[in-house]
Length: 338
Image (cartoon, rainbow, N blue to C red; front, side, top):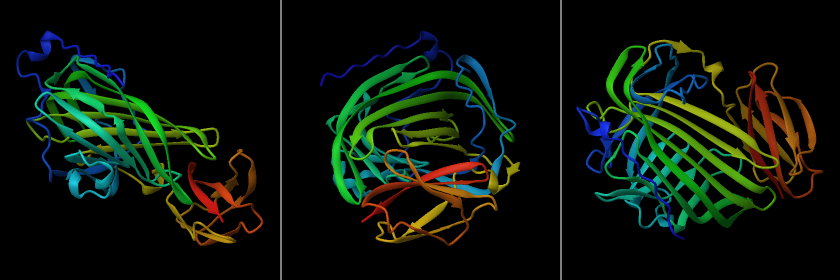
């Protein structure tokens, strides 16, 4: 497949102390930054673009005591190294682990792994056509767009594969000042990555996995982002799950309660199951569940509490979706009846 690459650079990006992305300022293997997990309902400020602008996040609040690592790993020793044999580095943030390599002139993606999805870990291997993430140097005004294709690996009862295709667009849409509650960065570029992956999965039909990521870099402070907003969305005829993770290098020193988190955390065991499942988690007093088949039909629904048992013995063998709503937030996970 012929790659399509658009690269436009504004002259102003090279004036003064303007920053750019290069192989030289890529974070090295082993670099890790503990990031504070923040309010996922903040305004993404997607329309605040341009040169000499200010992104104002002074009202940002964190979840007390909650951090996530933003880290660069060695792809040759990573959990899915055998699927990405030409990769050199990994980056992990939120529920994404990306596999890539680079030269002095470009950064190239070999694929990624999404974890925590309703259908379990999903491995997107660009083994047919890799995706270009950047053509170095990449400064304010630059846009890189490329198609990718390969194989999607997933497990719904048994390991399966299906063809995958998609497109990734990376741009530097702004440079200026980033204001956080207790810190300010005056020499920042914002790197925006959007990608969409399409695959047909048995029992789900066409599945679309989308990522939108805003990363704010000040290379005088760190080769890792000082602030990042990542949204992952997975949709099909029976699935509609979206999660946003906001991470800050600096502690905002103003906090939200943990019950404001968007994800409902729970586990299902055993899964697969032949008769009953037990659901374990911390739920609000008014939490409810619904059990849905692949056609979107609600088979059962009721209130739910920690340790609840749900009888699925009368269901036909196959895949179902358990949706739990707690504190106004809903999370879906897959159940396999065998």
